[in-house]
Image 1 (tube, rainbow, N blue to C red):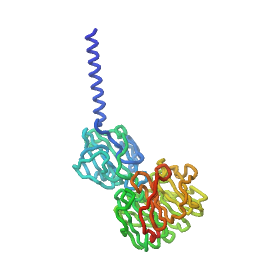
Image 2 (cartoon, one colour):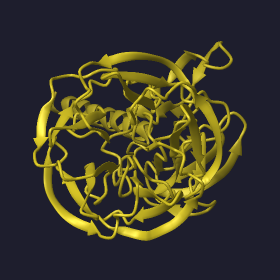
Image 3 (spheres, helix red, strand yellow):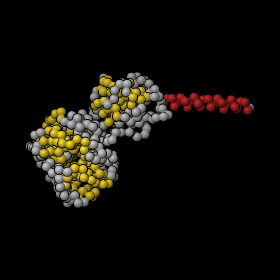
Image 4 (cartoon, helix red, strand yellow):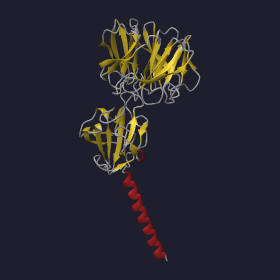
Length: 423
């Protein structure tokens, strides 16, 4: 009885060990390092059978699609440390990268706008390897991400990435550059004087890296100029400007200049405020908000350089002399508006689906002496969006606390009195 029982215990332990080993191996995850999410954004298409968005037939989707959420220059990072075994063009997938990891598994990253690694290069987990794009076959800016038990070139060894991804994404300094004009991942300021546009590149730490580079001439007749996250679907920050009642898109080239311009709207002369809040209605495309006759209107972007519709989203805004678009100011993940009325700053929290979620809240008093207020995104590198204002010719940084208020302020520039527009 005792020997039989002992043998039974041994058999059970052997079976348990084999099963446990199989499960661990089938997961393919190194004990030393797990896999993290390769990009920051909503999942727009899951792993498995689906209706193909272009061919309109049902077929297997071998990875997950992570959308940009209306953001520009979204970084893609290595899900785990490894070696780049592929960097190049693949039909359908466009610009793509394959990485082999220490456990023998490989990850695949597709539809990239650009690369920042080379074939054979060793990369570490969380290292930026490229920028999210829409190369190859796609219907918008996103990352197609695959996980393979072995080579990325096989379609018989894929796993639902959700089954292996965990932890939080490790991003470069700023994962949501609202105003990155020169493509370095840090927010910038553009100012106008004597009809010229000047770029002041931020250093990501609360100051400037490069000051006063001319990037445009002949802008005197533009009575409204705003920086917008990607408007035309190329993943790069753009400008929208109004001249003679017409609205023009000036597409950024991602390195501090422009690659073209086009008319995107007529009859805009009656709108006295035009701002760009990012994705306001939650469809993944960036939008425009304007004020006309004291009412607030949403003009939903179509993601390829134009509009798909408009609607009124607010009334009684006539007394507000400034309307700002700070991105997510209160930390709930939705874009917000900030306005000034009678010298006070008010926060209007967006609900993420095209409207507001609660009444306005006063977040500052005594702002009447500031003749310009702008919202450059995260200016000081702490991951929270900030405000910059001009008073008596000087520039001041008001650092946001990420939950709807401010944590401190400081002067960051002087001699700015000659600029008639700062954005």
